[in-house]
Length: 146
Image (tube, rainbow, N blue to C red; front, side, top):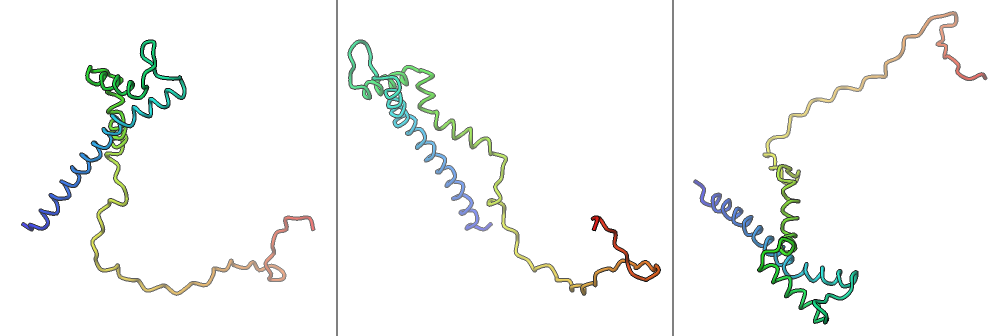
C-alpha cells in the first residue's frame, strides 16, 4: 500500500545483499592474495628459504606460482587457504544466527506514561512492645563480659 515503506524495505534488503557480496569479496581477496604472502613470510622466517629443486629462485613469486597452480589443479590445502577467511567468518556468524542483540530490539511504541500513584505517607518505624517488669524498662542482653 505505502510505496515509500515498500521501497525502504526493498532497499534495506538490497543493502544486506550488497554488504554480504562486498564482505565475501574482501575475504576472498584476502585469502587469495594476502594470506599466501603471510604464510610465505612466516614460513621463511621459521623454516628458511622457499626453494624448489636445487636452486633457490625468487621465493615469493615461486610460492605464488605454486599456489595458483595448486588452485588450478584442485588441491584441498590451496582452496582452504583461499576460502579459509570466508569460511571462518561465516562459521563465526552462523554461531550467532539465533542470537538477537539488545540494540536490534524494535523500539517500544510511544504511549502515555503509566499513571502515577499517590505516594503513601511514610509510616513511623514499628516499635517493639515493651515488657513491663519491675522497673518498666527494656532489658538488653549482654554479649561481652564487661
